[in-house]
Amino acid sequence: MNITIIGSGNVATHMAAAFKNAGHRIVQVYSRDIQHAALLAYHVSAEAIDSLDNINPDTGLFVVSVKDDAITTVVKALSAHKKLIVHTSGSTDLNSLLAFTPKAGVFYPLQTFSKIREVDFRSVPLCLEGADDGILADLKQLAFTISNNVYSVNSARRKILHLAAVFACNFPNYLYGVAQDLLAQNQMEFNMLRPLILETAQKVLEQEPRNVQTGPAVRNDEGTMATHMQMLSEMPMLQDIYSLLSQGIIKNNKGITAPE
Amino acid sequence: MNITIIGSGNVATHMAAAFKNAGHRIVQVYSRDIQHAALLAYHVSAEAIDSLDNINPDTGLFVVSVKDDAITTVVKALSAHKKLIVHTSGSTDLNSLLAFTPKAGVFYPLQTFSKIREVDFRSVPLCLEGADDGILADLKQLAFTISNNVYSVNSARRKILHLAAVFACNFPNYLYGVAQDLLAQNQMEFNMLRPLILETAQKVLEQEPRNVQTGPAVRNDEGTMATHMQMLSEMPMLQDIYSLLSQGIIKNNKGITAPE
Image (cartoon, rainbow over all chains, first blue to last red; front, top):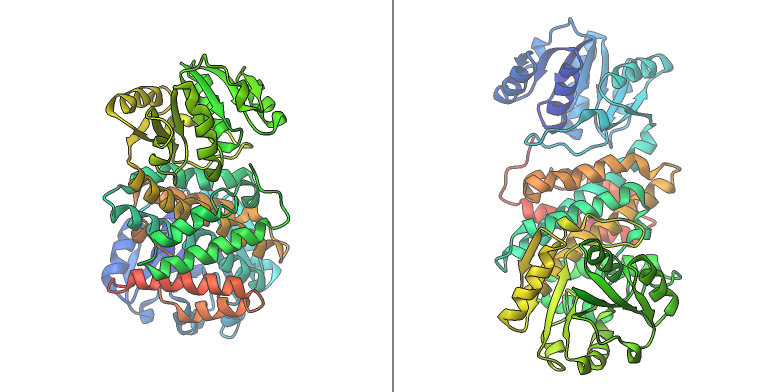
């Protein structure tokens, strides 16, 4: 399939690579910054453009991977070409495309992407939505060429998924950084924590998070929690986080017998 | 080596199994609840006891893996046997053992253990402390029989490690559960999030958390954050968590150019 990538950020980069690796042709890569466009275009053997006036109409699909608040502007410009347009955003409604074109869909990858890290795209859950059954069927066929995890998800549910992903990914990653800072302040290396971080994630691949919760809060170990709060006394924000998340764990645990 | 396990919880269970697998003899397993003691004792071919009066003196080491606030009571009773005593607690000072015996140390595994999940013990970081150099050397020798990750860590630093582990493990696991709840309320399965959770952890095995932070907060995407806060309007506790952790990410990101 001939595919045009609009954007050059983390999602655009990995999505373009996945399409290219699956044998599709990337026609053009657009970015406001021609250098960003050129870098990605080089990797996927495409033409780089920095103006939507230079769109090559010989494409079957526009994949719009730009900041959420730029989506409508871009789609408005692309709609003149009468080709299928999808966005890759978790929190943007399909209706925001339908305002400009009936040939619209969503191609949302439920994964965290950073340019500096390769991803096994075949395990990335792809959440699809189409303006009609024909479009959804076409998107499914395309999706299965790059992933084994393809879901049909409407806009309302996709928003929930995106919110859940913030709790399951963005916030844990922030907390990893907090842990690293605490160690660094005391001349200890983050490397000591890496096996723990990996095991914490691996545990919930087969178990429910509630059933494998450990730590002072789930044991209701008030002495240790008080000591920790005191250790954070000069970091009021971390105290607030410690207190709030511990309360959450304690609340979850109410009515369940504490483990020995 | 002949080893006696005091406790039958998550840490005691995995530690006893690791020692047994490495060829050591587990002499006895103590628990206040004889059924708990018996279950673990059965797995490691040891005798189960529920009274410290029945301790077999033919042991070289007492491994005390009980709740933090029970450690001193237990150690006081064990000290009469004049054998080496270690505890496995992250937040208990070595001094709390030295009050009862000079032959004391710490054997703290920096990992999350649940009875229902096997662990590759050779990758578990073991943080050791000894009352003197001879004890520390003996503990190191023992530690290397069950793990490749052996560290010497004093009580002050061990407390920091334990606090950091709460942020890196216990809190992320709680947030996984929050994400699961959000999906369940909307008839979606946790399984959709599992690849994301695993990738989030795997990313920081090679990268620094700050360099791979993704999501609306690091993009300072105020529209999406406002939408998320609204979606949580009937869950004030989750709103507080969302707001606080997003502020933390934004604060970290100050002065760094936002990714496109």
